Image (tube, rainbow, N blue to C red; front, side):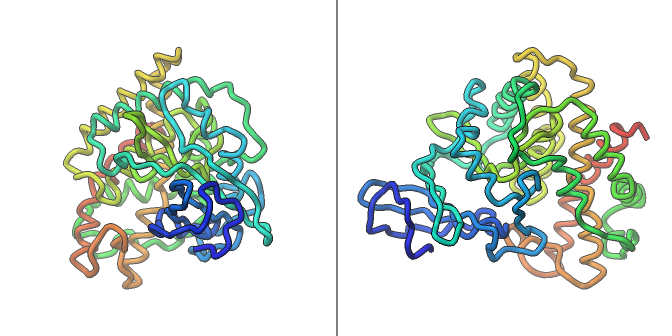
Length: 350
């Protein structure tokens, strides 16, 4: 933990309750802690351009970069996060205090929320949030961007990695992914630029750009979005596509519920859009398909490359170690990838 916090809203001495591991692989995050003090409790997030995270999560000083290290600080201190979904019934953690440190890094002190986190929400819970999200995002189609909002997020985030020479017929994967699925995944990768172009040409709104269950919690029965590090302009439906896929990619929900979840969340999101006056459902469905396929264009190539190099593809956070875990991941992700292939083919009309 930071040994000398400068902006504590809960007094001192501070006691570390828990070091939180949420998104600490990001180099823009120096650390996140749950703290108590004489004045109560808070979450302290240390924002820095030089955290100890992974190389492919490098922070940037560029305000439009997908991983600009000051963005979340600005999202809270300008009131953007609090205002974003207020009229649709989506909240954000309250800002308790914020300020710079002597080395130029930043402290962000946020409300400590104790509600049920999104990883434990039911499918109807997620659908209820999706309806509110659609309502909020319909309202933001004409909202002006801020200079610190991310720009062309999908292209710059999902398109930044190189997997030339992907072993599409890698034997372990081929035993669990049939030829049509592997051909579809290869098509997504090879046509990723077409998907990025399409995503940027479809109707736009302001997006959170990291909507998944671990960035959702609740307060007094209403959903709350956390982690505003990537927020910026994106397509209508982009956040919804991310929520559907990411609910299953890391095993947070049983993949047997994928088809039901896709249908319920999509219908709920479209209902929310319609409530706020946006009724172009066909275009929004195409945007969901295009952005969902584009966001994960790199994942199958990364998995196949890892298998070919003898590296485990199982997640250290969500899967047990060993070869059996890799096979379980291949099997669990198969229907999710099949959904992405279906999305890509429908969006590109192939």
